[in-house]
Length: 254
Image 1 (tube, rainbow, N blue to C red):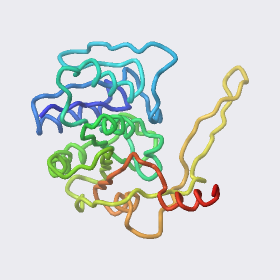
Image 2: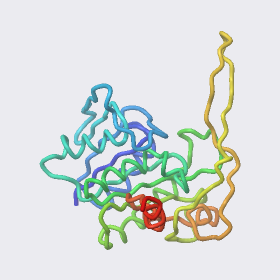
Image 3: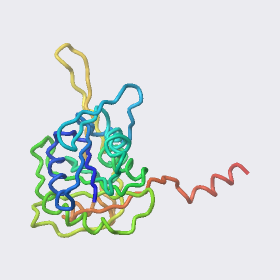
């Protein structure tokens, strides 16, 4: 089995090393193509206004001067053009990709690009409790449970243009309660914050941050699964058409 690894935290990210450890339990045919620098929040963006460079970083290991989407495209169209991967793994992301995070996430978007290309693709993220942990975020749950979560997915039925989003809870490996297949949750949009600062020259600048999380009422989504100490597994589909509205809108134009 040929596996492509990528991420949005960059080629040198600790989470990518964790992902490689997980992947080598599944296969010895591993290729890594990841952004040269951190691209968190890049979403499904594609670089069109400047050239993208492919930088060799070792055997079957490459950095791309672009986004996670660029990285997957370079992998499929250049690095692995003579033998495409059987599986694409994106991550392990530093921090959660739950609820509407998937619309911003470069980690999930890399898996989306793989799904568009017809390759079985999975995004993996490690949730952590405290802000500002940086590279000190704990990876032991992802490393201990990663292959256990992935193995059942490898030969599972897989519909076209779908991907799977996995999140690991911020608990000790022995405290994980299990694996729960759940739907995507939705937080309150008001959780977002814009933090204003002033630089030494007197000019204002801003940081985007996330505030308090408001969960959905039922314990049936990825948000609650993580809070309850479970690993969340969520299938996502790239067809974003809201089918119930088709006939309603069509009637407006009759």
